[in-house]
Image (cartoon, rainbow, N blue to C red):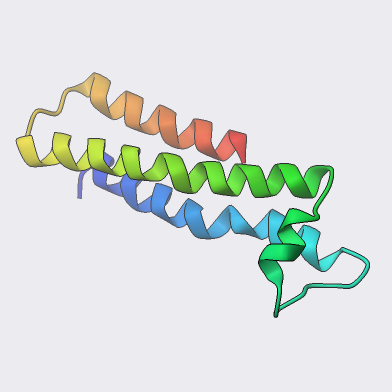
Amino acid sequence: MTIALCCLFLAGSLNVFSNGPQSYAQIKSPDGYDHKNSREQQSTLVGWGKQALSAHLNQIESFLIFAAGVLVVTATGIVFSVTDYLIVAYLIARIAYI
């Protein structure tokens, strides 16, 4: 498996793991985690919980473009060393942002 495809898998995993801080903020809310109306509860988050929700949603939005780019590069076979560096840089930036 190439570096690009490994990073694609890890970036896809971030979609799941980036939900952790936001879920923790919902659990720590005064009423606890609301399983029936979790989206309404997300809209009431403030402070770091709201930032965690924004980071999670931003991760989901950016992943589609990243995945398309990695798959195009892999399918065409035009992989340069700078491409791998950029792919790894994206992954590091996403982890730092979350």
